[in-house]
Length: 621
Image (cartoon, rainbow, N blue to C red; front, top):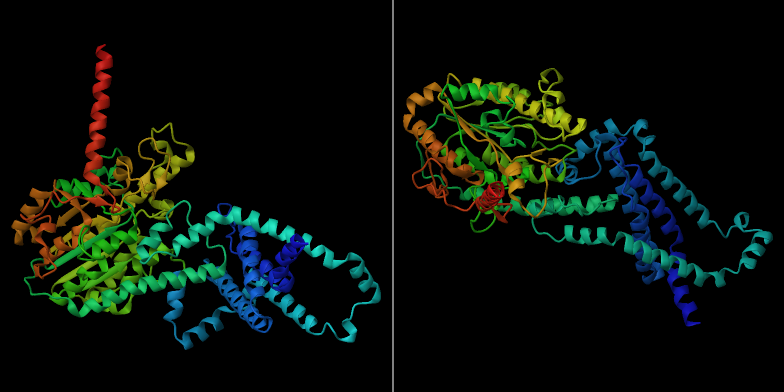
């Protein structure tokens, strides 16, 4: 009897919330499968049916424990939240090609009532209603119809017939309840075991206190699957709240920025930030394909000086951007957002600062990585503090940023800092250069260990680098006749079938090996000087030539830029300026906050020498 009571109790939550369970389960499945793109490479979350049952059964238990009068209203609130969130999520997917994410939520917060009205007037059409979004509306209509019928269940017309009542009585529903309870309990336990890993990942994802750690969490193979709109909404709110904390710190520091003096050492400083550039695929650095012909030509003329040993502190764009823009350096106390951003110092000193990006403008399809990298650049107060002018649209190819620059050039002053942020070699590589600019083909590579598909990817990556070469050369051409210095640095490297690894992209493993460091952290870095700049600043040119073999990590970049501008400030540190006699080349280059790059490379070189020594001994014997 006690067992019967226990299993009867297990069934009670379902019995008392049957409609909630049925309609929310149907809605959850629709939201899971309707947001899968029509692409063979995309698949729905395989564990969705199990995890959804697990989630709803727990909700039913909670509802069952709430007094009946309150339970009815709690259920109604949950219905409203579930349907509105589902409709919003599907609407984003249908019209914007993406489900709810932090950037969309940020854009919503920044939108006024008039803009919202205009948006829905323009986009809420019959086409949208009869799209995948229509499945949610259909469930909502069925649910509403059922609710109306249920309210009238005691009316004479809807009373069950004697024959129906006889069948129900014969079934003996009361005796079946313990069995039903046992079945639901067994299903719940099975689903709990199946989806436990994702639940652990969800808890881990929501346990961080800064947006950077959240981004890094999402690079893990066992990352959480936000398979329902309500999870995506919750995560978007969470990510925005974390980003807001760092933005508030940066905004508070705006008025604390101090510039003592500025000599305007360099009239025009141009910073080109590339993307996903593996140094070992650059012809200028010894690659066997001529991927950098224009840069090499300028190098041979003595205009362009490539640095031989430069690395990125991270292999994630957003992490690198925070390091590059903040005067914070790896090993300093506090966080990156506790320090001023270098464009603020330039503006305070009297430079006109222009920012041209082909990646970090708010857009609906931002992944959390782009959101995390661009949120501080797109905050209005910070943007006003850093930049005098910036572009307002993104482009398919980086060459179009030159048109943006030409349109904004008239705003410039006597002394200028111009920052170009390129898409560079960001995956998908084949979309990073026009089809008529294809030069390298799969058959150009003597790599028998690679498949045809891998050779296509490799050739596309090299074509993207070749196209990038033309873009940076076009930027340089804008400053050939001016007093200008141009610095090129990508955010990080990229895997593209280096050595015997059949992989492209980036590996976000916690274990940083020498091979991974070489492929994903080794980056090209060069400085170009115009003829007029060389004539006016022979001392700077001489310093560049003398230090181009020094070890360097790009978290120190702001201090080089401040020196080139002649900005004197408490935030400038000569030990981080690679051109300074005070430069600390022995500073540990810690990558991903975990591994010493130089120790990794020294150990790898020692192992290689040991292997060669052992082979020589074997040959002698």
